[in-house]
Amino acid sequence: MHNESENSRRSGIAAMTSPNIPKVAWPCLLIAVLLAPDAVWIGRDRSIWPWDPSWYGEVTADLWFSLGHSLRQWCVLMATGLDMKPPGIAWIGQFFVPLGELFGSVEAGLLLSILLTQFLLLFIIFRIGQEMFPAARLVPVAGAVFAAGTQLFVGLSHQFFPEPLQALAVAWAFFIAVKAATWPKPRIVVHFAGLLILGALAKATTPVYFLLPCAYTAFVFLRKPRTSGFAEEWRSASSRVLIAGCGLAGIAGAIWYAYNFRHVWQHVREASSGAIALDYGFRASVAKKLIVWLDLLNQSFLAPYLLWVFVAAAAMALMGLWPGAVRGKLPPRAMFLAVLCALQMALLLLLFSANDMVEARYMYALLPCVAILFMTVCARVPIRGALVALIALCVFQWIAANRTTLGVGSPLANQSAWLLRVDSDPARYDELTHMVQVTSTIPYRYNIVGVEEPWLNANSAAFFAAKGRLRTGVRCYYTSLGYAEKDVGKALRRIDELQTHYFITLDEPFQRAPPNFVNIVSLPVLRELKGSSRFKRVAFGSQNGVQIFERTSDPVPARPQQAAVSTHGGA
Image (cartoon, rainbow, N blue to C red; front, side, top):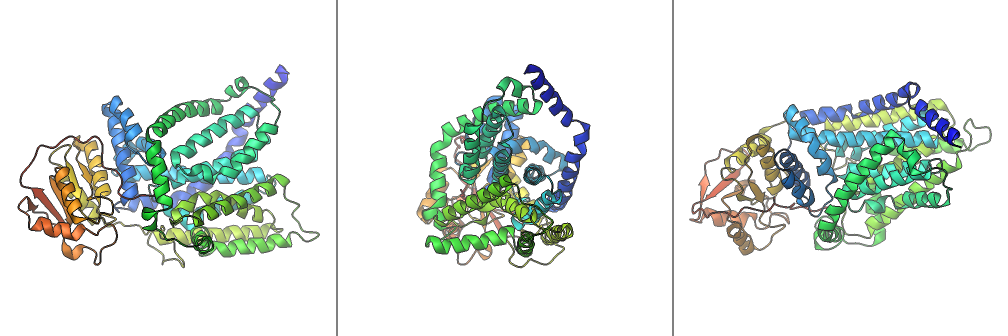
């Protein structure tokens, strides 16, 4: 038995050597080509990140600075920098900050971490296709090109959000489900532990997204006889790396959740239902909300051309059911996995419809399910040339989506709100950089940004301050008048309680009229400060209406414990 096990191990090592390198290299090359336009977008963009991406970016930059200056401060910030949203994106992103400094843009470095996540997502989708349909070599290609051409994939490749990390965890869950029947029990345990840790660190809601594939994997695990032990699994280099990573990330993640669980749970509840969620959604019956979510599903993953590709593939797949068709029957395991994907999608759509929040970004982790269903349909296409034509149509969608974001194509029909055009104009970016330099004269002082615009808000200013400290070592903090504050008196008291030195806002002609729900007190506070003797206006040349007020009586500030938290929520 020992000789058989040793021979099996050696054959496994041999299978991972040079003969298999091309099998891994060419899918990687394909995926690199699919992501090339996103890299171009990142290199050209000079837009300012809005609320949550700036908050993640601020904490990420602070983590990298602390790691190089104080290990104790770094440990504290790892546990407290993000208090209500899991920190996986910031923990990973901190190691891309020096890459961004090398490129001259911290944003570009952080978005490269997102591109790496997207690369792994497409690679796992490709591997799932290979495992499900080993005799159909074009089917994994179809799945990868299909996923890369969806509007939400392209759009979120340019945003510093945790949804790509969550989608990666979901894809991993389905890959484990595909391999569970052939893997030994120890390997299932190692991958399952890594999956749970990654999912928990990506978003608190991730377990709901891979509930069914995990249940299936657990079922297979319980029925599978034990054929090897962990000692044999430890001989695998990849397993050793995964076990070490699970140990470190698991301990750090457990500490973070133990410290912040109350805030996380409160945020999940508020972001899904209630007054805050209604600011970003609406309340209706499950049936009516389901129609809305199905429309968002179509817009995010199928519009404008992939829906017709899917329909054409399904029609040709039905032809494959006729007697004498070229394609044989699908493997039972593949059919079962496709059904599992459909059920998982149905479960999540019903959960979305039962809540008040409506946000297409939250369904991004359904992309592996949609891709698996598409590959299942493609596997039934009876003519190889027809499958090539379907892939060509997927490429056409990929070209159209990327042309739109790069500004060389017209807007798409039924275009997603997340498919944003590249902004290469540095005017606002440079102005915000200068504003932060002007208002960062006193370290550790809180300044207030009294307006909430995507390019000018407390989070974006705090992110620019955190980036500035990487060069200067000086750090100021920025906060808002209060999330969606409606009481002018309370907003004015906040300015005094925080001993605010600088107050930043937009002049009256540049403010929204009427104001949205996060800017109710912005204009009244501006008028109050214009007539106040406690603040004076600072000379600041701005083409975008930025106004800076400095306190005339300067109290000694108390050093803040941490940077201001996000002013905008999301589940």
